[in-house]
Length: 315
Image (cartoon, rainbow, N blue to C red):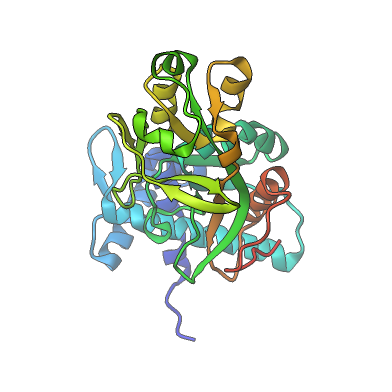
């Protein structure tokens, strides 16, 4: 096999990653017990090899260029895999460590995963967790994420997918709204009500509501004067304040229903659900911190969830 990297180049990559993580040549030099000039030379060596600028330098700070950010994310993962590979071969039993990046939609972040992170870090304090909370689909390769949680299975065959749960949906409204507008008794009554809409970022379309009719799942297009995009929690806030009816995940409004702040409607037509799926790029080697986090999520969120037909994550 052709040799592409010598010891000097690998050392330069390590110093570059340190400088990117610490946003300082001086801090990287102190961490690596070298001089700031050595860090600067290493970065310049890489920039000359690649033909691109990796940092924008000023007298007070440095910051990654777009090319530098992409290169850093790839190098960070590669160096991490080298460390894990050494530990695997030598049989060294160590605790998971390093930075783990995960992207997830707003409701799942606030009501499912974020409350669990203190428990995870209490078990594995050497793992730093960077959480991207957004309904936008991310690019694993370009943006350097390790995991993502999404509401639908990927079409990309290179992705590993595991269902975490089927989240139940519920139709609710505030007592104030129902006092003003009346309570719907059947699905046909929804046409006469203010139905709060959510626009799916990936398609720009309003999400139809799901119900059960004669043991079959049906999708109903509703209308209303309110529409939210990006943050699905916005539609729940509107409903809490009397704006209209909303269909949302039960785990978001369970306490509101128990407290009487929201009222569950048409329960006989309810019981439908949407999945939440854990995604991970298919790779021969999964780092220890990622594998540990996946196992933690499955244990705490997906005890009853079946593995998707796309692939199974190796434990």
